[in-house]
Length: 491
Image (cartoon, rainbow, N blue to C red; front, side, top):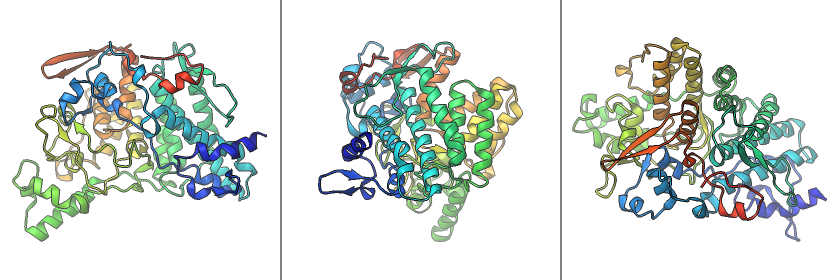
């Protein structure tokens, strides 16, 4: 009976997922999955994880027109930007489809649950079934990781077993009534899925939208890190790097390769020496404009991506406006992340003073919701810093930075002690993981762990965010509250 329910409802459940090519429509309108390849097709999802207000909350994004923020034209963005503790966000959590992290994550989880329940009954090779089962479990863990870190309190080992969490569904059952778990329950399921998936994940996935073993280790490291299990997080991050740079066929993206090709093109075509096209020189802006589409590229399948996932759209985070405090983290003369992505895009007269529009070419895919190999390096660095090993902490930071800084300007960063190494790691995470979910997630975990109170300056006014602020947790959507027994976790 349950299998009939699954088959009969699958078309509705997957109406917005990338499975159209894998469903055979029978005369009665039912969608039937028979082949193992049908189920494998459900693993890929063209829709990513919609991240928008989070970027305003953590201070990365601002508006192209400040009046829109000041007038609360988009209340969730304004509340996040101004850290408005008094505004009740819950009634405005009404977005649907791509714009609703809650709906998108549970739609993905429904996909993965159907695979887990049924792939072993399908017609196909045992290897494909084994890979499919593992990939569905690791992706279910990833979706739950997004949910628990958006709609529940940050993980605190002292209170996680009591803190209200989210609904956990391990089966596709349209008749089941969801029960709200605790934060600890959610992490237990996430870690169980990861451990069960890891042995059977392929070393190399079919494409960058399907998870491989390198991604599995990276997610394992990330979950341990967020739970403050630093020894385990360190081992998993090192396992990730070893797997990725070995059988996984991944490698860090050396931006110097594309930059030097662009410099050579400018010299051969326009007779511009490099000194004319560096930051602050007359031809810098023209140089960026001319070579952006040809050389400043980053495809989905770049070996640095352990898993590629879009944001709300395939173009995210463009056309975001970047706040000046974020831009000030970079050294424009030597940091190729600035050259490739920030550069000289002009500000707008209606925008926040000092902000600029994120600027990257049409063939540059940001990967806002996936995981890159560089993140594994930074997780290893953080773990070493926390263990008091400043030498290894800086080794992993610098090994990553060598691929981001113009070679002739590169020098190693050094730390005076472990605390200084931790400061450097945190700053580097802000640079390297810009416009992903990480700055928001880091804000949550660091505020909670270190009891940090944050301040922000906007138009001469100082705003404050306390470490126990409810703004660090998003309310459940209105539709979820109406159709479940959830108790709201925030406002």
